[in-house]
Length: 470
Ligand SMILES: [Zn+2]
Image (cartoon, rainbow, N blue to C red):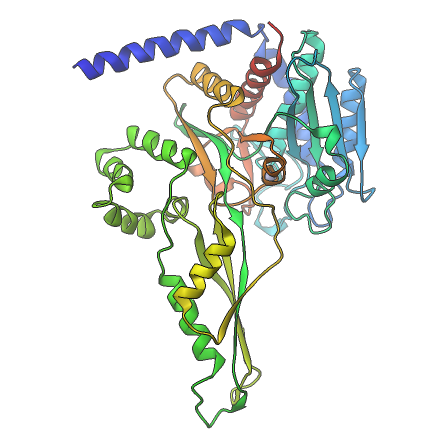
């Protein structure tokens, strides 16, 4: 009873606080913004920016026209003229360091025969907008655009610069045209205290948003090749040093190895809050993670039933490729496997490879690290003003939703920004479990029209609360 009373008074306090946050935002007639939001969003989805080849300059030209028509100057930065990046800045009084709002303009390719509608039609059907990029990442792109337009029109004084970045080459930046180029060559133009971008989002349960995920950390790709060597020879003569035997034993050992489990601030809070909103049995599984006695049973459960959350607990090793042999009667002198390793943000990767060596325990097998695709990036903090704003806005817009800081098992362009010390947070529109089948990189992408509008409002509330001078 006492606990309930405390919980309900906390709820009242949070609602009051949320109301206070909302009350500070100037009234925007959101109904009125819908037509313009939809116009820009559809126009951007209709531009084919499939990467490869990208052609992101198409989107840059569109954005440049819209921003400059509003009196917001822009700059383009291009390593490849077809794959430009665009930066626009609204100046603040400099009392706080800038906020970077970024989104990528490229999308993954399409298999047209899988689509029920034109993948670049931005077709409106059943309350959804259908099209490649409708989820990844044009909602963030258009939300950022609308925020820039609305901030400029409102004329409100800002404590910090708000920097808009539309970047190319996120999906596959093999030539370094996007974030790598901007960070290496033009960092001064995007340098900020905080950034917000894709990498979070809401969970829709029917009409209700039940969870808001805020991306605060991501794992670090640290892939390796396992190379086994031995004497080549005739297939009719068994040899103990056959590299295939050594390699497969090593893959088997690593595949079964339970690398050490470790929680960080993000995953600790994530599992605590997830437990608070889960049915009793699953809640018990999450709560047991920090209990040495009961953790092994929880880990087994997650490994079997919930591999994504299992991966959030440790540096994961996943064999993804095998390569060996030239003929059925030839013992090759070399055999290799590729392991997709995703490290916890604070992992000492050299030590981890040593640990893997110990597990393999076979001098015939060597670990050869592959070139890094992303820099190691520390988790962003949960005690920053920006994170507080993200939580407050989530609570004010969705008072009954749980707000979960989240660590992605994948990687994003936030890695490069976090590596430069920028506290970076992932946000996104709310989607249902069914919509997950139409998400980023799916055969077919779509977004609920109402979620798009709510997400623009969310982004505005966040940028406003973090930047406007009071
Ligand atoms: Zn994306």
